[in-house]
Image (cartoon, rainbow, N blue to C red; front, side):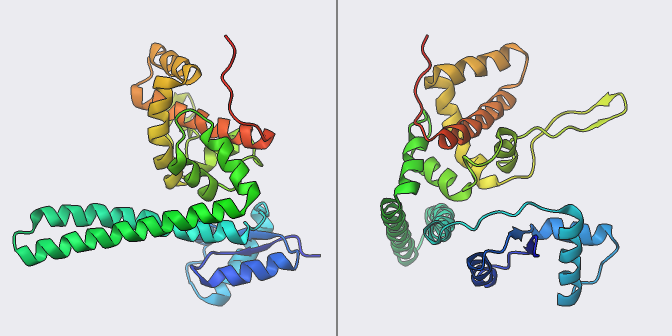
Length: 267
């Protein structure tokens, strides 16, 4: 009996493999390549060939027993690809704007302006496609509506949470915070109590939650009270804001788990 099939994501090459195995009903474990490489180094396997990697992944799966996770829907997979491309275009737009401000030749200024228009058209086309995919899937649309009901969470953030964190609603609160890289990591040794810090997780989620947290501490009375309590306890504003980001993702996880929109607490 197959308990799990462990593999590393390899760009476009693993997608067909992943879906064929899922269609066969096999439990899949997509292993982070960095984690797999560190495991190989820990057991003294420094060589890297297909055969060595396969044996190492099999040993990793047997010893670590990573949890099997369901494959996301085909629609969500398409949305993920579009979303990643959209983020890249936003970076291109910023770079093009910066370059355009430095151009002196009229021809180069015209080319820079045309490149900006092209990027804007491409971003608009991706946004239109994302909305079309969302409208075609009632389950995703319901999850999206729950997310945008949270004060501070706009459409862009909701898309990021929906696409980059499909596990929302199916994991424990601490797991949700950890996936977003918002769970404090202890650094203690003996009597020494080191400074807690956040690291790892999915950087795109943290970036998407920053502005909603700023909005929440102004217009969400519950979050504002928690933020003020952190400040009153002597926490730096950045630490307090990170805590609000963590509470936002935990709140989103709970609301989607319960299938209900956000409602203000009664006084």
